Amino acid sequence: MKRILKWALAIVVVLAAVGFVAFLYFIPPLTQMAPEEFIQEAGGVPPVSGISDPAQRAIAERGRYLVLTADCGGCHTTQGPKGPEPAYYLAGGMTFATNTHGTVVSRNLTPDPDTGTGSKSADDLKRVLRSGVFPDGRGAPPLAMPWPGTSNWSDEDLHAVVTYLRSLQPIHHAIPAPKAGRGDASVPGAAEVAYSLDAGKK
Image 1: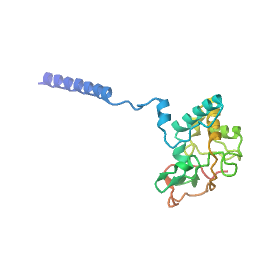
Image 2: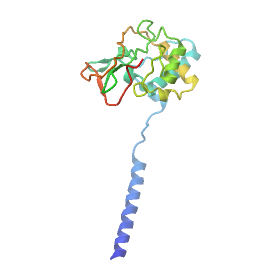
Image 3: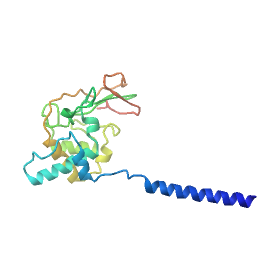
Image 4: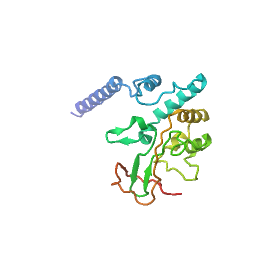
């Protein structure tokens, strides 16, 4: 009897292993298109075709790819009643209400000189991407802005991203400052974030 049970258990294990291998073999890959196709399929994202210099255009195209794959627009594109507003791509304004450290508002990344990055130097922007430190010395909490990931980008990649951001159409879109204290999830349009974000620290 014990021998029969052992054989039955062995058969079950073998069938399970074969089934698992077959499952892995037949499931579709997670990435089903090449990066070049992904860029072409990204509707609503401003292209770099307006840059006349071929070398600069190639650099900006690399930056555009990085901005898309890092999903910068997921937080930095203004939200409307039906979702992201394509006309306000990377113009900021998305609000995150945290449960312990205030309210975070995504910044305007377009080169508008008054409300965006137009008045910031390339080094200022690279510093934020590399270390999460804004020109005024305020630090971006890593869960609000994923600079620990962008800090791994090469100098060439950082330059490409800044080049792409500089090529965007400036959008005048004033962004409120972060609010210290306990975030209120009832803020209109706010997304509640369960983890702690040090949004109000200066």
